[in-house]
Length: 386
Image 1 (cartoon, helix red, strand yellow):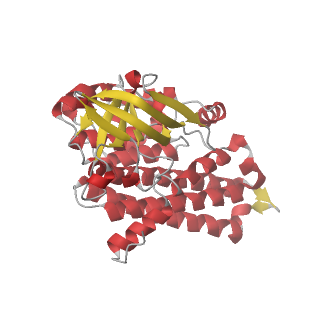
Image 2: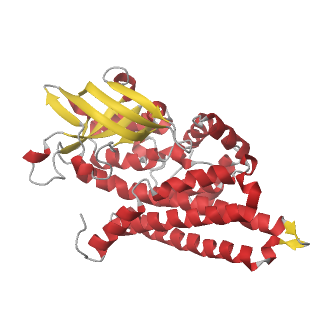
Image 3: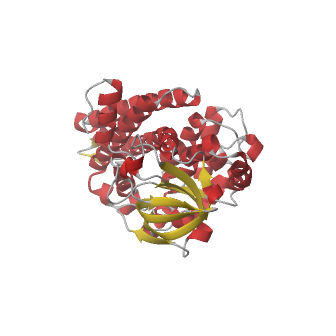
C-alpha cells in the first residue's frame, strides 16, 4: 500500500511498475471494445494510488496534489489513460474540504479500500455549458429530502461509480444577490438513484471516455446528502476545479512525454535513403520543439501544484498549467503522427488512440479560450469580456 512520506522518484517507479502489467495491447483492446479498464483501476486501488489524497485517519495515504499529479502523469506516460480514474483524485477535495465529519467517516474509508467508487461529477448542462451559474437543474428541499429535477450532459463514468457529486440550484437565480449564490453540492448514491428518478444514457464519443447524459425526474435524496452549506456550492466547485486543472495538466504532460518517447525512438530506428530519418532536421527539429514545450508545461504544473499544496491562491497557475500542457501534448501528438507517417494511423502503434484521447483536453475540462479569458481578466486586469 502507498504510505505517507513517499519519495517522488520511488512513487514514479512504483506507478510505472504497476502500469507495466497493462501493456499497449490491453489499452488497445479496451479502446476497441469501448470498455472500462476495471482490472487496471482495481490494481491502482489495491496499491493505494487512488486513495493518495485521502487522509490516513480515513484509510488513505494522506499525500498531496503534487504526488497525485505524478501518479496521473505516469499512467499516461506509460501509455494508459488516467481519465478512467482521475476524477476520484480531484473530486475528493469537495468531500475533504467541505463535507461533514459524518460524511467523511461514512464514505472515505470505503472509497480508500475500493468498496465504493467516486468517479463522477455532474455539473455541465446542455443549455448552459461553461456558464455554470445559469444551470437549470434544481434541488428543492421537502422535509428531510431534496427533490432533483433537470438534465446534465457529458458526465463521465456514471455507470462505473457508486457515488456522484452533483451541483444543482437550490435558490432561484432571480432570488439571490449574486448569481454564484444559490447553488448547492450533493453527494448522490447512484446505486439507489439510477432507475428511481435518474436515467442514464451513454454518449458514444471519439475516445473511450464513458460519457453520459443524465435525466433527473423527481429524484429524491436524503437531506444529509448536502455537502457543506446550502447555496455555497459554486465556491466549493472552484476549489475542486484548481485540483482538476492541475491533474489534467499532469496527464497531458505524461501524454506529451509518451508521444515524444515514441517519436524519438522511431526517428532513430526508421531508415529511409540509407540513414535514420532523425538525421533530417525536418524530423528532428519538430520533435525538439515539442520536447521544449512539454518541459515548460511540466514546470508550470509543478508551480501550480506547489501553490495548491500550500493552500495559496493558485487559480492562475492551475489554468496556465492546463493550457500549456494541453497544447504541448497536442503538439507532441501531431509531431509523433507526422514522424510515424502512415504507420501512425495503424492501431497497433497506439499513436492514433492516444492522438484521439489527447485532443479532448483543449476542450475539456475548461476550454482554451475560457482560460485565456480568465488570465486576461484576473491576471492582467483587462475588462471582462462577458
